[in-house]
Image (cartoon, rainbow, N blue to C red; front, top):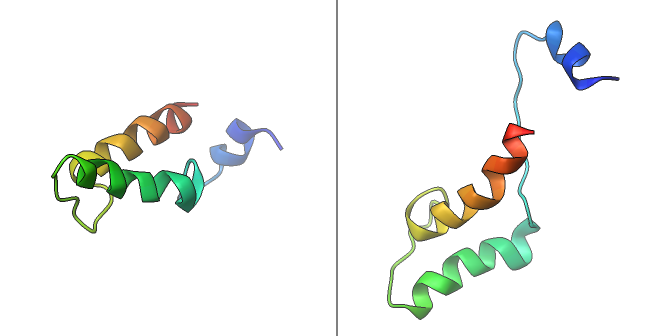
Amino acid sequence: MDLREALAAADYVITMFQIGGYKPSTVIDFEIPKRYGLRQTIGDTLGIGGIMRAIRTIPVMLQ
């Protein structure tokens, strides 16, 4: 089914995906800040790790 056609009659749309998967992407989001002495919060949508996640995710959301 065409995405636009499927969404035309939708009352709600929930998106849940992770670009790059847990390994290596999420692991790297914590390891890179730690390497430079920065504390990454557990919430992976905040801080430096959150910025890296956004850079991976936003282009896909805009498709």
